[in-house]
Image (cartoon, rainbow, N blue to C red):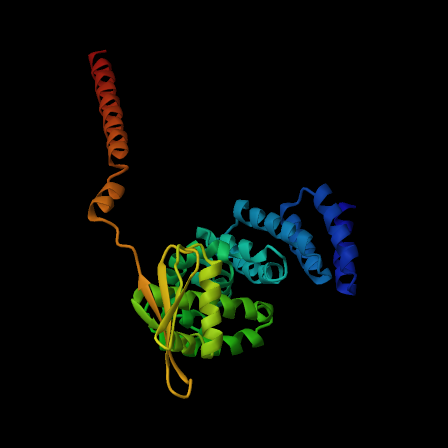
Length: 347
């Protein structure tokens, strides 16, 4: 009788009544004790919620399915690998449609089991993982780990999106990153899952380029930086000003204009951790024409060597205490075992 619910839910799914199928499969899972059919019903319920566009319910079902796959004792490790591979592909529908999906895809795909699955059976998923990391400012800390994975799998899979990250963070090739960014725009526009993330990707990619460029250069020509970002000079100037204004760095923008040898200084409040000086100098002529040269001068604060020593040895005392305590416990345990052994021998 209970199995009839499963069969009826499958019939509803085949007829295109996905809402009815989801209800039938839900009730079947509540009543059934058959683990194999319950796993199949979870897949059916997830598919039904995806096809109805109910992304909150789909995300919930995906989490249940993930737990079931991780906890189930499969007859073969290959079977579990296949189940995880299918879940990774199905999850793209949920992650790129749910409002919090980009957080979920990063957390799930960077877990050891699923990262190993991606590297083993579906390295092309790195395109979507890379896009999620680039477009998610709350998961920027995963960039270093992502770069390591992309380097490891570059022999197996590469596309303009992964190559953009490699060019920027491995080779520090800004011209190459600029070319790949143009290719990324085309790839994103033609990808079913990523087309909605195209604007966010381009915006965040430019920010990554500018941050990396500023980090390794002391003096920057705004015109060159604008070309690297695929922007004209006016847009590039606005981009740099907005970047400094919106980021949490202690920055000072000093705009200097010289007209008829009269200097005018406008200093904005420091707002970034890196001190940035933007100077624009205009020289007047008899025809009141002005020649402009915009540069960004980076004044990265240098940490004292003594401060570096203090920071690196700050936890040394605590770690030494933990190590000494561990050694004492092991010595005590060894002494206790020796006493027990002698007592047994004496008996």
